[in-house]
Image 1 (cartoon, one colour):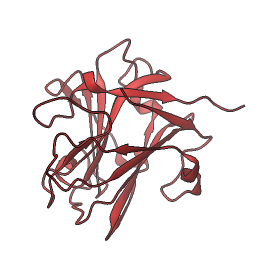
Image 2 (cartoon, helix red, strand yellow):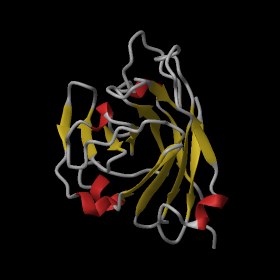
Image 3 (tube, rainbow, N blue to C red):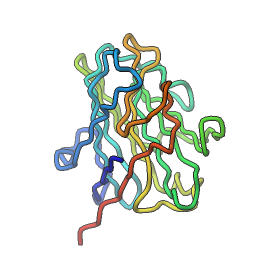
Image 4 (cartoon, rainbow, N blue to C red):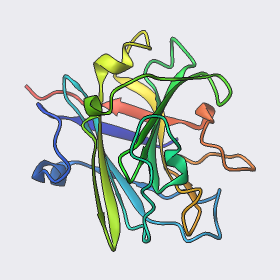
Length: 205
């Protein structure tokens, strides 16, 4: 099982903030779901403040597809990055799926599995989404307020469970790539039994 430590910062940084240079990077590079595809190299950096989690995705994906820009559409069919997590796995089996299109569209679900999911109601602006698309790749930044998470979950623990994903079902090169390996015959990110470990790093005095 992989683990990733979210660094504590006093504020949640913007997409081009130089602060990101001092944040550890993880690669979304398990390609067992699409071994013959042209799988883009995608990295993730994550931090947290007293207000929430912020994740920065960077991908070298070409021919970016960015159609969806709204709430709970079909971002996974675009060039898409995702974070799934269970904020309190010792208390509940329910987890969130945050799926972000290169166009800035966001889908959020909450439940115990693929078939048992609530589509969450939200306004896009509370997540401070930023994206940047260039010919040689794209970036996306998403801030997830703790207040939003705690509107559904009982607690947000310092040690929790989750996974990062990269996909693009209807792109020129469909792909399904994960950070922590999922052992399943067909592509399916809704496998919380294969979540890695997420840790909120210590605050510095």
